[in-house]
Length: 245
Image 1 (cartoon, rainbow, N blue to C red):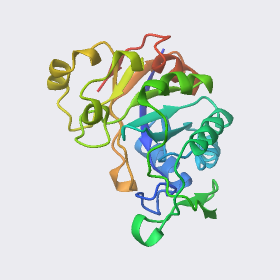
Image 2: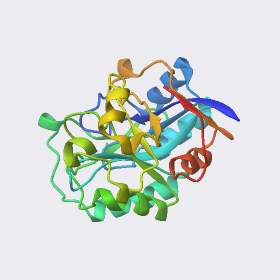
Image 3: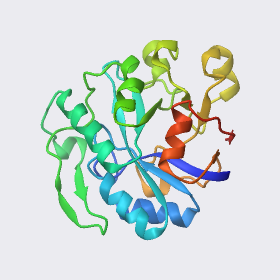
Image 4: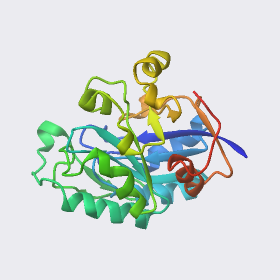
């Protein structure tokens, strides 16, 4: 077993609300400097910068899990992670086919830069990425599994764009095996008011949109090996894991 220090919720400069310095190369090397074993790139409704982040991670000796922060039709954010870039891009294509397309306005929402692994700008995503997709939160776990992935609701304690803000509970029919709680979230209170999360794996991630918001590696998971496949097995509820926040 390996004690894996992680951050599974990071935004690159593809997310319109993220700083332009959040390039795949910078994210990977900041995470390496901070001492992480595994990170995930989870831009809003897109996985287009994941291949570059995985390549940068391979060069730096850091495991990077390709992913996405999906905004569901309930306006709840869900982190979706995949074992390979191909799986992430298959899911990305499905999300794009089930999303409302509006032109981005960079002067209002920010740029949405596509980057390679060495910080070269390849272009910009023209469609605004922060709108909700026509995908129900009850279907996300099954849907991500079709692409060999796993999902968990993001920052459940927040007053907006969270499953508790949208629905008031983490519904049993959604079949989540893990939840993300913010660093300043009251875990004991959340468990008292939402006992359905008690048996789930609890995760804490930075949700960093700026390099300076990346946190020191404190939360950890025990995994059989430091790999996306082992992580996803845990998040799918197929493998038990020890964890600490």
